[in-house]
Length: 285
Image (tube, rainbow, N blue to C red; front, side, top):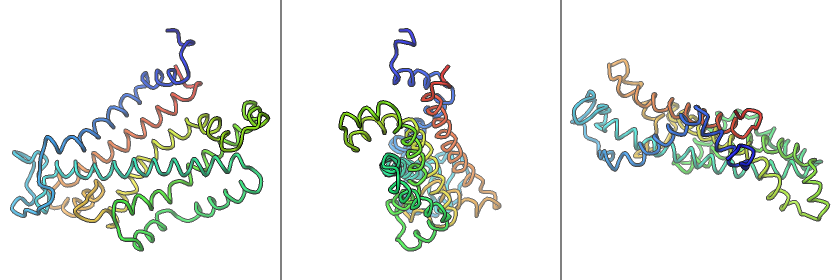
């Protein structure tokens, strides 16, 4: 079928499939998800009971990546930590995207004093260093996976809202929007049928990067000792715990979580770049 006969959606998918960054990023993300969620079904380890008899075993034999200072198998620990990291990343990305899209779209379409007030609220919140505010809030609320998800969502939707608002402002003067207003379409209908669908490219790209940012933020909290409480763990917690023993020769406690964390961030960044290029008609080849 000639390229001209393809719809916008198929053109985007075709461009995405041809992009080497897309193939590497999407393939790596799928492999990571299978490793974290299907891996424990094939490689069963005890990640609940401490066994000091297996403390700090070097990689080899029945423990391919060795064990940590509490006797947990490091490979099994990576799988368990990946579940928490990916669950948090995707949940925060979805919640952030929904909240930021709704707020930004309403502000951009409303315009005038309403838009000015709504954006001053965002500017005020953005003026506060997010890490300082997050550290304060983590110390106030009891730490848990859902608490950290809620806190990261509250602090992460602001950028999405500004992006969507800018896109909506550029769309609201288009002919199809003016035609919809002339025909009596209400604000909610214009948002649902015209604004958000035409801004979907910006929204998807932002959501992709939000996953990586959320995982990195969780790792930052864990590095500062404010991550998930036991028995939960994440890659940042593993990395922090391993750094204490790195100079004692226990390299396998640091390099595996560091490597998988870097690979995850790079994979989502590649996927986000590929989606952006696929949605931009000027960048399609």
